[in-house]
Image (cartoon, rainbow, N blue to C red):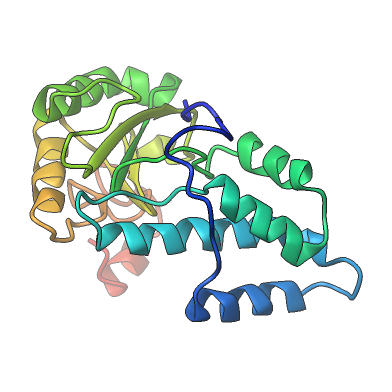
Length: 219
């Protein structure tokens, strides 16, 4: 699960402000809502703050990933003219928002029933052994954080994990380590199924509309 929400932790920066790039995106998000209803943009602005921090973290030494400092929440509250506690409530409720520092690559394991039945425990153990950390911990170089989460909605391609914005599916203990090794080199692994499965079709191939599948070159 997500790390504890500590507004007064030592790692909290004193200031936050959207960069020119992210301010433009924030303005666009706010403009989607009627005048006087700008508070509805709180979720997209929290996401933008997290992404800005991630970009800054990728250039830092050691590196770190996207999270939302208290200063960012306070800034969003000011921009949207809402009480700070309302922003804190949203940020701390949804698991997609990180309210404490995480690694450059946030590895989220689905361990609910479908993934568990397909071997998610082996996936978790392989990552823990390879990186030398436990769930909720971050590697010393700041690159990886391991986190257990609820269902990520890719049950048919279980076991799977989410790393930052990407899904990696049909995993084995060996293939998940390969994904980590590629990321550690600063490269981009193949996202989606690691066995070549097309979308969510049967692992044995199309079971219906077979001629159409051939025409579409999905088999």
